[in-house]
Length: 537
Image (cartoon, rainbow, N blue to C red; front, side):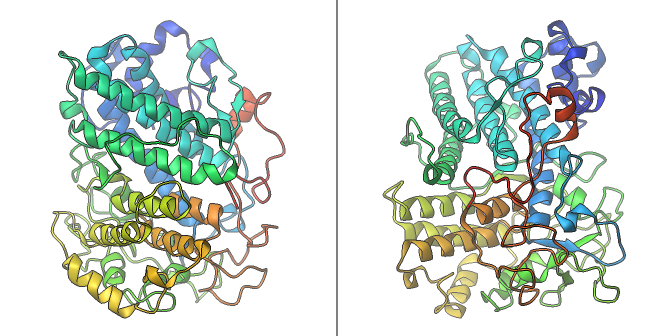
């Protein structure tokens, strides 16, 4: 989190009474230069202005850190992670009876990050030389606001990010935000196209730590994010102004944020730093392990997939696992050093890495969006009539891309050839509709297969998307009820206080700082058990 967030009580947006417009530019630079990754300014405390070239890489790195928080949130709520033995005090993490203190970092870190992108947008207005930066900042602004809507529903949007011009921004409803975000993406692509036609446009160069200045890929990402908005919003009544996409197509490669991560203080990939090892070799988080539910998609209970199982988990198939909420002494395994999501036997923290799976190592790029997610979005869009692509082809490409991501090690090599792994996967599951798409005849069956495969693909990669899709579709299917049949038929906590039929929460609640500084506008009566995101099932 940036200096802006730490020094100004969670977020400038909450506490603008202490800031004036004159200070904004300097604070924006402090926000990014104090994120302690790229040393772009030798004396940030004396800075009074900055440029998009300096802001953008820091903002993208901050996005990776923010997404890491969302991944942890999605893993814990969405069935990928359970509490480990040797710890207590899990509290609302297992009861779901969330308070305004729970997951508050999702709000503050996202708005903090949005300030960075808004600074770029404001700076570049009327400057076609900066069209590339303006377009990319707008794409990233959309991604940030979608994260917020998917977690909180109604949030400050139209009136937000205006500095001292609006200290208490009104809330915009989630549907309206979704509609506007799709339009913003059209605008972002248009800005990039202006840059393509402008003779003196400033190239992205080293400022682009995602695509290294490949503007076609940025436009493909924009199209794919727009598709996600439409797939998620159209069935819930969002009246999008334009449901077409630019001719650039959709994302076909993994979009990875990597400023040059390395094993160093503050410079490791944030997921590795959280779930693997610290740069000094110490264990990272060891209070969470795998759920028995997620393992059913590898061990043959629901899907046979020993190759990805071994590439994802340490000591597969003997993975340490638990049912969320189980705190019975003697039945909770402890987390191994480096965690269960680091599959390698090389467990010396100062040299660990170069593995497959979701963590891989300290230098790997952080997934902004994977090709697998993009293909599964395209598959669903085809099934429900949003596009005319071949759903089966997109489904297959999604599985192949998911295998490719999981089987690729930190150094870019594969632990197993993807083609051979896919052949085995198909042969082992030829009668399984979650794998053999041709066995599905109804729209519901096809969507279930797509979302189930996406759920597997998002396992500790972008776990928040697996959680979002469960709430939207009800897939993967679980057994509902207070006393579920077993640990492998549901991922709901055994001590859940949720009153919902599936015993799961519907959302997190607004943070206490928002209630303190913008309580007049903040929606009231929000329940983690009954207040749903507008697209939720």
